[in-house]
Image 1 (cartoon, rainbow, N blue to C red):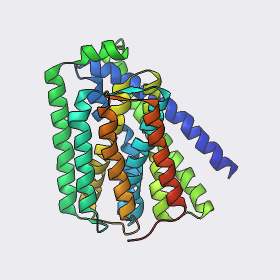
Image 2 (cartoon, one colour):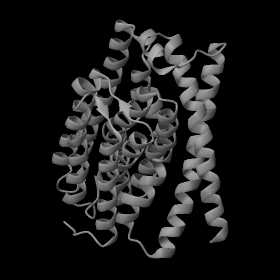
Image 3 (cartoon, rainbow, N blue to C red):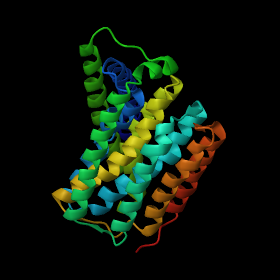
Image 4 (cartoon, rainbow, N blue to C red):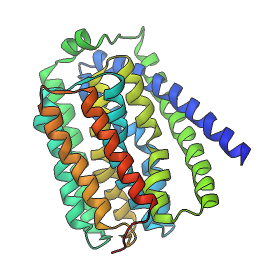
Length: 317
């Protein structure tokens, strides 16, 4: 158990450095390609940091562990907003772009509503998976198209203090190295966390909703915290919103396309909490287009209460 804890700490350190490289490389690439850091946070960074969730959910689906596959996504989405975004706002109040309130957060809410409705009976088939996966393709394409059309990267550079690196190869190199470190470190973290969960006697459903979800969300945590300390709100918020959109549309969509998903232990309470924190983000962002420290504390408190509820035992469908 001592070795397990040491490996857990090592994976957290690696996640920090991986996130640092990913933020620096993607920020530079955004400015160089005339794509706003907000959109890069919503796409490149968000999808990259969600790769651990993708690997875990796909493997769990193929192994017939639907509760871990779905619990990982639902738990990650709750963790991303309630804990990561809340903690990031406590570190440094986050300024939100109007685009987030008008476009991206509503897309996340709609995706959450659709998933809640379609998965209410604990099943997601290939047709639903195909619809979700088509949705992520459309969303990504539209985000990149309108970002290049507006060409607002220069303004974002002035606000965030981001810098372009010496050569584009440095951008790509940092992004690739950062993502590789994040994926392997996150995988290491999840394995150690599962060992600890089994040792503590936690159920598969709760393990997916808490330990696995939090473990695979470590890249998002590290990335958003690093971005918040650098006062890069676009990356900090965009990473979370984009990750949640990717988790539902891409990961659940692709997983269901590969094999229909059944997860009867993940119940309506978990779905409604995920939907609730997604909807809650709209009024929080709307108040001055800023998430302040008090609102961040509120979000973290929601996650703490939900986690306590889970650990005390959840009702089955």
